[in-house]
Length: 123
Image: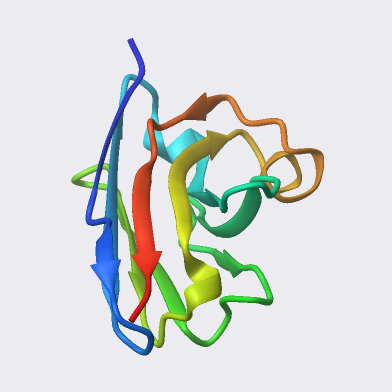
């Protein structure tokens, strides 16, 4: 059974930082691209960042330079460090896993979704 344990969301002021953690189980971490999507109220779910088994990291333009993704294959954990947060970063952040970078970033063929964690950036 595939499960995701997500943590780290919360309320933060603009300019602040949060760290999200995702610990998937039930599939081989090395065989998947694991990363984050987010969805703001009334908007489509959008890609944020991904981590590959070979250590590759990818970011959406909106977060590049502010967010950093890392992975620990021994612990099956992916971490998203979010700095310089803006109100437009507010949303539910979902951990997700796909077979390839194309599936994650282009085709949106996601095999597994986490339950989501709320991030709110507000003064």
